[in-house]
Amino acid sequence: MAQLAILVGTTLAALGLTVRLQGHDASGYFSKLAALVDLWAIHDWLGSQRKAVDEKYDFRHSQLIFVFARLLREGMIGKQDLARLTEEKRRLIRTLAFGFA
Image 1 (spheres, one colour):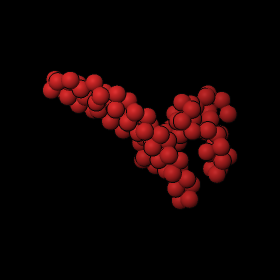
Image 2 (tube, helix red, strand yellow):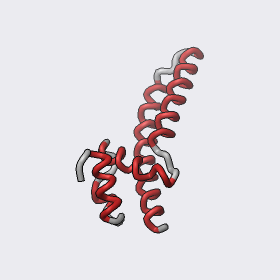
Image 3 (cartoon, one colour):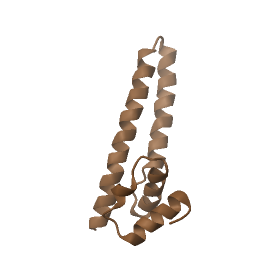
């Protein structure tokens, strides 16, 4: 159970970074809002961003290893973030992320 808490905590930290980066992107969109039609473009963009975040950060226990592998591969977390996991889990995550242990 403690390892699940570690996994979720690390995933939430990466999610926070993603949301901050998307917030920066969104502010650029909002500053260019010129007409009501633009509002629908922002609506569509925000919907696509939500979908991307939902797919990337799947908090189901059965998916956390895959989420960590993706975050590691994308550089959103580092190997040091996995230090408190068992060696078996770290090896599996590295294998999924990079194709080797």
